[in-house]
Length: 386
Image 1 (cartoon, one colour):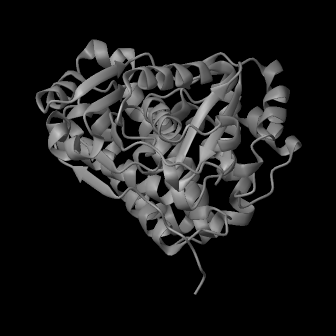
Image 2: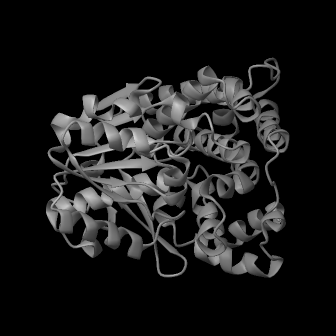
């Protein structure tokens, strides 16, 4: 049997309303002084009010840090750590999309260990310990609540990551009611992002690609494929929202252990340079990367095609099924009203060469791709997406 390691979050709670009863799940864990990390939009909407009130009612002092931006920068992370140190917090709660959860992970690490962040970047370098950590996603896309990865923007464009099981949270709380008001465009982009996680995890060339990740990836695609349109066009449907949250989490568990590849590598320059949201960045290059990979991975993609799209023909050869799968993914983006070309998000053709060069920096991801990607290949993919 092929050896592998599978790490995930210790405790997972999925229940409508679970976030409003946060103290019931987390009070004993996080201690008497909590750093609550979120973003200004969620604060304005009042979504964080009930979880914060739950902690305060339980006698916990709450320091709220609510200035996390999309693709959070190093200054934001260090400011969150500073707020936590000043309050001498005993635990951290991350509440929001992937950006808030990523900041919470590293804030818990740095507050708990005091280690040098420059030494923690990369795979397996963060040693900990960290403070007790609870993560509550408000979007169904990143799966960050079950991944040992945090991505921070350093400088103007560079994205750096910390990947270590030590930053997996103690508890992930999935509350579908938090996502009921999520706008259709964000629902679509984050949902496709989760599909990308499942697809890349399933096809990953990484040595730790394993049966558990593949099983979880297929169930994630089944749940998301069956529910994404309902979630986008009937956003108050709690069943569809719950299925999307669960699918996102399962995809997160899959790629946390069988890492993603070229779709993410080529998406990073789109987000880092042009500040396009991560999910949309992935969606913009997804069909073009899969078509590039098809000569090597067509049979693998055919294995999962019917999980996402059960109506696809079943009696064709694997390459035909793979082609139909990719076409269906491209069509799904159109059906969901997403932007589908790089030019649609303001990226000029003159930027493509630098983006291709920047994508080559992401070798930790590119090594997992089913087909080797050169800088020339990356430029061709960007041109196809432009």
